[in-house]
Length: 140
Image 1 (cartoon, rainbow, N blue to C red):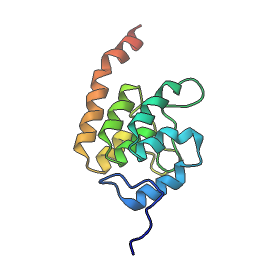
Image 2 (tube, rainbow, N blue to C red; image 1 turned 120 degrees about the vertical axis):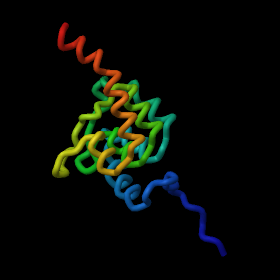
Image 3 (cartoon, rainbow, N blue to C red; image 1 turned 90 degrees about the vertical axis):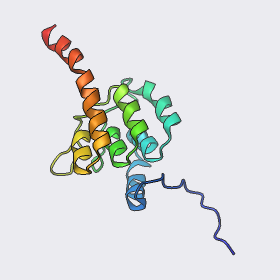
Image 4 (cartoon, rainbow, N blue to C red; image 1 turned 60 degrees about the vertical axis):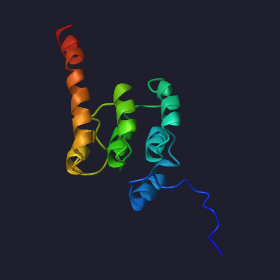
């Protein structure tokens, strides 16, 4: 007799099951980590629906979970390139640091530490595109 169908969401392809479970425990009860949960579950449509709430006081695009950091860091850990692109385009900071892990790391650091060249390149490209915006802010 086959086992009963699972009522839990399956682990996204390519993601370590233990890491997914740790993230599930960390994000499920934290309303501030809704973006993190969407990234973890590869739920791109809900991620896009939530982005307009960022900056309204209801949701912070750069909120950092104590263990896993920002939603952008979670996207890098999950090797979720679509989520990385969406979050960067929405203005997520590649420099937002995780809360309690020492040493403190950013999404860019995580891409380097995991050896994920594609993620590192995507983040650097986005940062390079933002140089003109930064120069405008500095020079007024």
